[in-house]
Image 1 (cartoon, rainbow, N blue to C red):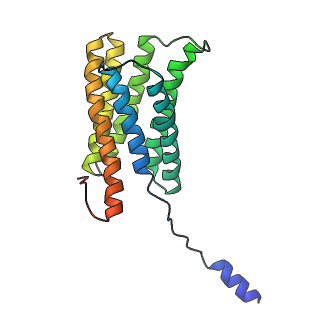
Image 2 (tube, rainbow, N blue to C red):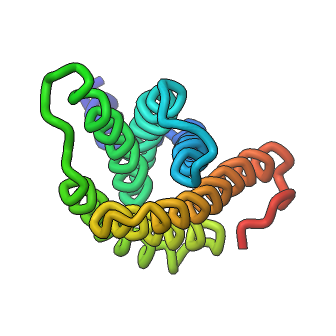
Image 3 (cartoon, rainbow, N blue to C red):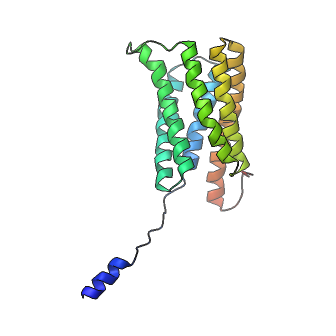
Length: 198
């Protein structure tokens, strides 16, 4: 009896990870929110509650959830990227809402420029990491890095034309992220390459 108990304790129990791939959730949450914000930056509509709600809920909370799910899978890159960009969206919404609630003063253009530069710097090593991944992810992270620096330049130089250019570049970035996420869903469902990732 004792020997059997000891033997069972020495035998590792293998539990397979059957949880879903969280990357599509994170990529699509990032992509859709990025497209909508950059339609605003390109001048198509104002910055209203629709963008703030998307930034808080789908760009923010959904990406944080995806990041936590990536942590469970042992994916350091996915955890870092999705959790960080999710919190970027939540912090961006906070930057816009807190002054309206008279909790804090509005951030000056130079402050916003510094904020965006820091996110651009953060994105550079993530892009470098994607060089060992598929082309679709490389494109997403290259364009998001460029986007942060363009948006920062628009604020730092007080040049609305740069922000408009950033808007169009951001639409491309967001659409690329949506494609990459949806391609993973389709390829998983059909168990073959429906949408190539490169």
